[in-house]
Length: 528
Image (cartoon, rainbow, N blue to C red):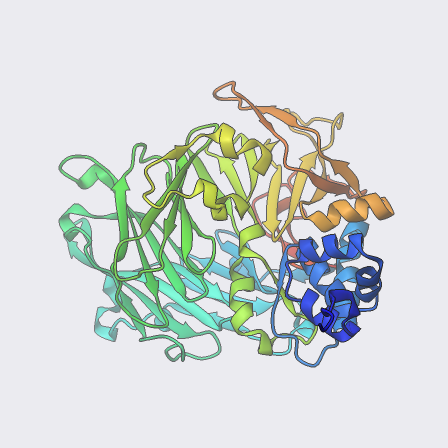
């Protein structure tokens, strides 16, 4: 009889090839139990790259001509740089004068995006042009924002804009209106899709204009607030009506989602009542290419795999306190990059995993920040295909979240598995209003690789003990325990200096003012 071929007798090239198909956790398990496999692992940059990506909860994308050894070194260097956390060295970028007040500001893929609703002005420009292969810098006037015929341009309102530099996309939500004496009624809603680097229709769009459907008649629906959100091939528009003009004095929200690359119409529509019209009670965030959350006094998980019908409710997750609004969620760059990675710099060969990202929530008043991992929304044991069960907070939340106090100028930003928190310094001098005069930035890394580096290299402070915070309004005590590694900057930020902040895979963006006013002064960009 012929002897059986054993695994360890195979050539090393075959061993490495077989191991490369395993999940990163299984690669580590196998190579920690066998000396032969361990030696093969140590000699393979590809396997180490796979486990490094997994430990940082990233996914590989197009790698181009970059070798695995260079990718591995670059990835490790980037991760190590975050733990140095030096904010003393930065580039200052001035804000255009017309956008210094009354503007909505976002950061996307290294670009600053400004929208000034009162003047229908929009601007995009690169924060660090030298780091980008192709740059876009555009000013958009009201005339160039939508395709309303010239004779009707006095009878429309631009509601909101969404800018995605990775996909070269500008989406503009607007409404035509009917004026009847002192009354103004909304008539028809549209979303135009144009290329950022030109005035024409986006080349990947199914058409120039997306059309809304199934809204009430204009006499019963007057827009109070809107939000347009994009995520890869999806565009979503959320509308609130003004209950003061409706016969029943009942406000409602409406949500419509388009697959904008394949159709200009959509049957993916949801709506519901608003309990308290003084607050924007619902928000939306996408979790991947086929599901999203509606955020209200609970979290409702929906599937949009079938865009020919209304979204399918998968599960409902209860929250420890009522009426929470989504504060920020930043996966759009990564999702778009996965299908457009050829346009990125050669070293960009990974994206954050949609199943292992952070969401940031803030209570309505506000009082508390919550950082929650998306992994729970992909856990089969928690997703009910009928969406009938409400999963109590105690069953899913404490081990999957961290809650932090939100006091006045405290800020929080999330990206991938990292969170940045501006926290008042304990014992710092207080001003006349009882607010701290000094703040420090706390960087928190929730990935497994951060824990590993803490154990091996002593980088950061490991936080794995539960923490308890009190909600001021309800006096409820909320205990959470999701582990993370933290580093704290030694540089302080003065009261009123920090307006907003963002972070992405390798930069911090601090929007600051030199004086204690609401006027924007400049960006500080810190590279890692």
